[in-house]
Amino acid sequence: MSHAAQIRIPATYMRGGTSKGVFFRLEDLPEVARVPGPARDALLQRVIGSPDPYGKQIDGMGGATSSTSKTVIVSRSTRPDHDVDYLFGQVAIDKAFVDWSGNCGNLSAAVGPFAIASGLVDPARVPRDGIAIVRIWQANIGKTIIAHVPMTGGAVQETGDFELDGVTFPAAEVQLEFMDPAAEEEGAGGAMFPTGNLVDDLEVPGVGTLKATLINAGIPTIFVEASAIGYTGTELQDAINGDDKALAMFETVRAHGALRMGLIRSLDQIATRQHTPKVAFVAGPADYVASSGKHVKAGDIDLLVRAMSMGKLHHAMMGTAAVAIGTAAAIPGTLVNLAAGGGERQAVRFGHPSGTLRVGAEATLVDGAWTVTKAVMSRSARVLMEGWVRVPGG
Image 1 (cartoon, rainbow, N blue to C red):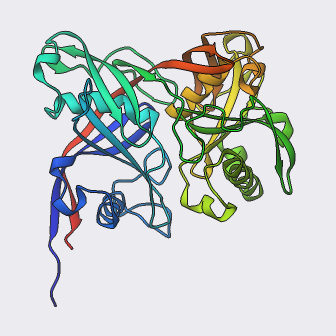
Image 2: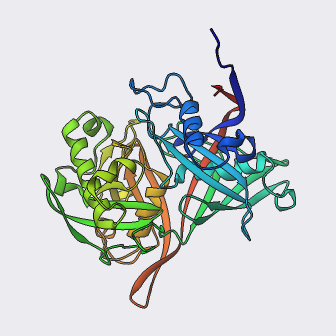
Image 3: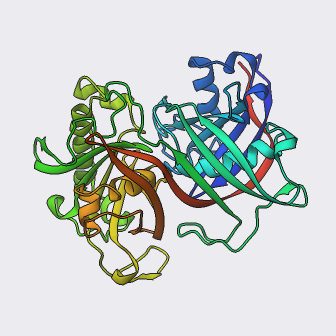
C-alpha cells in the first residue's frame, strides 16, 4: 500500500499578545501555497489540525480556541516605506475554512520580532541596542502598523517586566501604532461609520431593536449595550460560552449588524465571515473578579467591554477589537464613549474577562466627519518553538 511521506516546512510558533499562531516566511512555503487559493488554505488547515469535528485540533498545532487557531505569512515588502508584508489567516476549528477578512491585533505584536529574527528587515535599520522600528503592511485590510521592537545585543529582546492581563508571565513590551485604523471594507466604502451614524437602531429578529455603534476601525465591530441584551459587562467566559441560546443570539446580532454595515449582501453569507465583524457589549465601570482571580476595581477602569470571537466570548480582548474600542471611545457620542462617561478623551482603560487594558487613539473632526490618525497600544511577544512543521505530502 502506497503512502505519502510527510513534508517539512520551516516555521516558528509564537505568542503575540493573548494569541498564539504558526508563523511562516512566504518564501519557505511550498510553491503552490505561495499564492492565495485552495492549496494554501488546505496547507494551513492541515498545519493547525482543521477541520476537526471533535473540536480539539489534536492532530495539529492549533489549541482549539479562536486565540490559538491562527497562521501568519510574512514577506519582504515591495511597498515604499514598509519593511514587510503581513498576512493573517484565521483557521476555523471544525470547518474547512480559512478566514482572510481581517487582521489579528495580538499577533501583530509578534510580526516585527519575527521579521527581524528571520532576516526580512534590512540590517541597517536594526540597532544593536535600543528600539527597532519595523514598518508593517497589513495585507488583509490594507493598513500600516508600526512596531517598536526592543533590541539587546543585536537580538530581539523577548524577556522583560511588561505585564499583560491574559498572559501569565511578563515579557518585553512591544508598542504598536495602528495608522489610519479605519478599516477599508468592501461595501463600506472605507467609512469609519458605514451607516453614517455614531449610533444606529439595529433591528434583530427575536432579540429586539438594539442601540448599536457600527464601526470599521482595527476590525469591523458591532458595539451594543450590555444591559440591552441582559448582561452586566462583568461576565466571564463560562457565563456565555456554555449557553447555546446566548451564542445563537450573538450570532444573529452579528449577522444583522454585518448586513447593516454592508459587509454581506444577504444573511446567509455570514457563514463565510467567521472572523469579521466582531460583536462586543459595553457597560459603565463596575467591580468584578477577573478569570485569574484578580480583583478589578471600578475606579481603576473607564468602562467594561466583553467581545465575541469566532462564536465564543474571548478570554481577554482581541487586539484589533481593542483598536476599535480606543477609536470609538475617542469619538463623543458612540456607545463606547458614553459607557466611559462621554466627552473627549485620547485613551481609555477598559475591563475585560482577564483584567484590564489601556488603548489610546487620536480622533479629529474634519469637515463634519471623524478621522483617526492612529491608535496605540502595547503588547508583548515571544518565540515558543522554532524549526519545522510537518504535514502529510500531497
